[in-house]
Length: 204
Image (cartoon, rainbow, N blue to C red; front, side, top):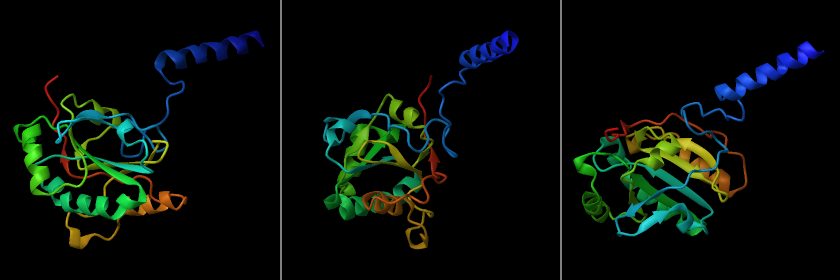
């Protein structure tokens, strides 16, 4: 019995040292977070020059957090859809937040302001120079979307829908997730594979 007990103790020590204890598995298409995890906070400067974080929207029933940028053709293709999403769900207590972390000359705050004005964004467009928010969420593409519930748990993540071309959309992943969440129902497809341009990381 002593030998067996010591063996289990040794295995436990090894697991702790190797980091196997209390480490939740990441999502199928996300190496950092999984469904049910608490959504990490975000911090950045909005196109209104105000500092923005999740806590600023504590009354929202849900938050649609989208990592996007100014120039990626896929991200650009979704701009009107994000505007429509905010318009359709604003009265239901859903808040869209778009955040740009790309380290490129075309993604400065000043150029983001021009983008937001020209496209008439009806949601905050935030600049995170630190890129910390994208790393915390395991974001890899623009766009890469996350739905947070009232407790700010991640309940959906991945693509907004199934096609860059709006006329070819057959599956509205984000809208379906929002509808299920607001109805108190189970989100049938809680994770999909994100697609778009890769996030442009700064030099380490």
